[in-house]
Amino acid sequence: LSIWNHVPAGPPDPILGITEAFKADKDPRKINLGVGAYRDENGKPYVLPSVKAAEDRIYNAKADKEYLPITGLGELNKLAAKLAYGAESAPLLEGRIASTQSISGTGALRIGGAFLARHYPGVKTIYLPVPSWGNHTPLFRDSGLEVKGYRYLDKKTIGLDFAGLKEDLAAAPEKSIVLLHACAHNPTGVDPTPEQWAEISDIVKVSIQVSVSNARLFPFFDFAYQGFASGDTTRDAFALRYFVSQGHNIALAQSFAKNMGLYGERVGLFSVTTSSPEEKARVDSQIKILVRPLYSNPPLHGARIASTILADSLLSAQWEKEVKGMADRIISMRNELYNHLTHDLKTPGEWGHIKSQIGMFSFTGLTTPQAKALGEKAHIYMTSEGRISMAGLNSHNIKYFADSVDAAVR
Ligand code: PMP
Image (cartoon, rainbow, N blue to C red; front, side, top):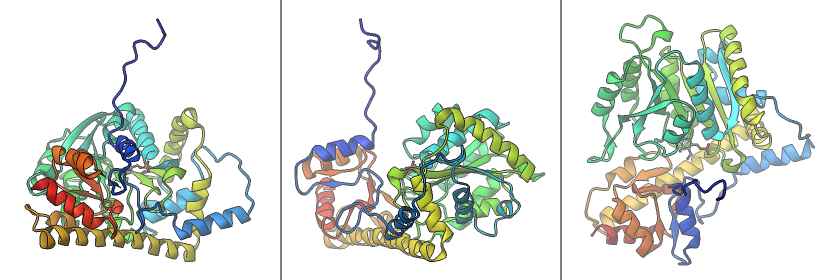
């Protein structure tokens, strides 16, 4: 008998499995709306011109390939904190944000989960929105936290179940952890309004606030889409900055996969606000103790790209324009799709959510059998929950997509 005889075959990854099916499909009309990676007007991957410019500079500087420190490129840690928290942020100005470069957003969440599992003094349960990004549950479980859910999507309106959300967060045990998507919620595309964020902040805080460390729940922000929601990195930082301004201590996972198109370079950051520079130094030391036995230190090239862009005001301004270009193209696809379905085809159902949803994804409301039928009959691939990546649509394929959706729901 072989050593691994007892190992059962696991299921394929629900999202990356879609790409496999798409690749195997030989039909020229095929469309991949599964994976959340930006595509240009011709359906091609997009390397941002600001990224190419940064790479030219890095190449010309003939820099070496030495190891980074355990917590990564110090310059990037500073610049990325400024991008997320804002230049005027109190914890930033007071030098009390502990942070580490990470293996993109996934690695930031995983290091964060491990840090909380080891050092968080409260309840080691993290509450995720239902639904959430599919990788959140296994990732936090594997990092040693217990995972539970709070209501988020109202399936009837395909909008926010705000009453359910408030009820569930208010009922969560004192000192639990709550995961919040900072903007462009994946998979729903449904975000709270600024007023709703303010209410959420109040629920997360203790009712009679004694001190920040006494907040009722501990908020962990997943910020994978800064700039992708509105096209403006500052506007998209509203929720995070509002919480920090209200005195919350927070944890944050950042990713440059989407907004700089650095997917495979794996550039991200985990950070946590602390109460003093002295506490920050202690937290930093424990983050290092977590990272060293996992992967020693993070990759270099993508970190250099991101920090080269963020350090240079001209290049940053160019990058912000390119982010806006991506967000705007997605928003125009939302409008076009809505118009096709509602006005041209008079497709049964209400499609307003396609326009009102935010970010890379639309939760279409298509059922699992409809999503499956679209794959088999129309060669259009999406997640089984009916989530589509808006970035996979363009002026060449959107009419075919709308026609296929129309056929699937009739
Ligand atoms: N969080 C959310 C909500 C995401 O959608 C993603 C990417 N799909 C990530 C985190 C992590 O992505 P990455 O590791 O590529 O930065």
